[in-house]
Amino acid sequence: MNSIQQKVMEIIENITHIDITPIEITTVNYLEKGLFDSFQIVEIITSLEEYFKIKFSVDDLTSQKFQTLEGIIEIIQSQINKK
Image: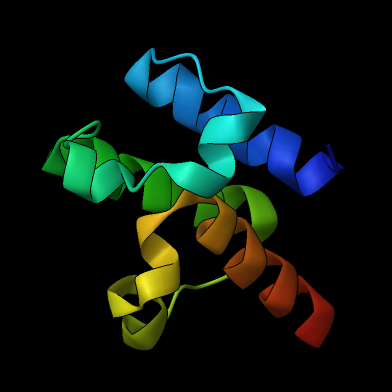
């Protein structure tokens, strides 16, 4: 598990109080499963942007990738690599 993945999981677990296993990173569509409510999603987005010093675009937020934690991690990694 890389440091970005660890931090994303930590942030989400702190906000949602849900334990996330590494297998869930790739398999669970958290939106489809209703694991997070809309307030938690906003808090997660804000926390990730602040911690990683990035800004999610509208395209990021509406992409298929943004529906899984693995996808969110990929988006973050991509933005960090652009810096």
